[in-house]
Image (tube, rainbow, N blue to C red; front, top):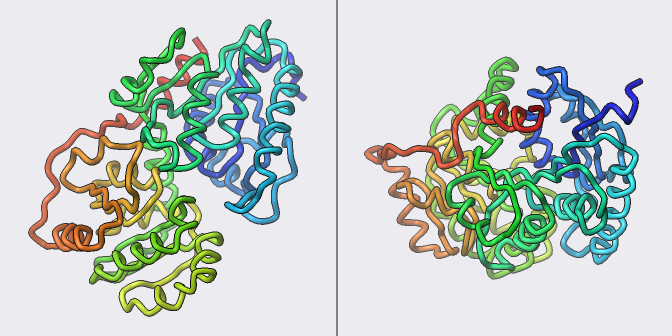
Length: 374
């Protein structure tokens, strides 16, 4: 068994999304025979994702994985107390690794902010390692859109030593932070998506529909807590005239039922509700679909990777780069304007103009690993 003294890199992960966007870095470390200490906070149940992506299982799990997919929902008032406890646990675990050089964490979750604080100079004044934030610099400049992710991003930026930014725009967003090392490598989701697509092809996953189809997800807190917003979202979905598959998360279904909107959604003739897919299956459908309608950030990035028209169900976005193309639209939940864009995007004459992906190209995970192991 490997001694804790031998680990020079620790990776802290709590959610499925964090693992999805970090596994290419983990694979690259494995290729270079560089082991890492994998800390899972237990925020989400990772299920069999590690096995699917070909990465090792966590070396330690700080909290038992929840039986449901996520430990918390929007009503859970214990989340704040859990974060305080998690910070202490992360700090204690890192102190058992005396020869660390880097602590790596990703994204904008409770785990991300906790890892940044728990590994910070403030709580570890004599530390020798550097804390590294993957996917740094995303900003909507609205603390409530998305909430609480925008707050977690700001907290993480302040407590991290190295900020690996995803785009030129994100670098600009970080320039007000003093004494930070800012590096722009791009977004690891590019490697994640292409590697997942390769797995999907090997598994011979089938399309959701033989003809043109749309793909929908809705899970943002600020949408789910508002009946008015959810009604507008259903209104936008009613404007889609091709078969559209809505991957419904548990918390989304719960809110639709609470607001009495589930039957209204089910009545839309072109919308079919389906269970959430695993990432490999989902990425294949993204690569094959004709329209994306979403409120999440990752699908905006995947829209750019696979050049798929995207209607964003939000009032503001921390990923404005895609809005400079001719195939991403920030709806602000305006049904009439969204309807116009949907018709434009689904018109056979619509063509995507040439663009350069602002989040980089395949292989950027190698650059991140080169930085970590040099």
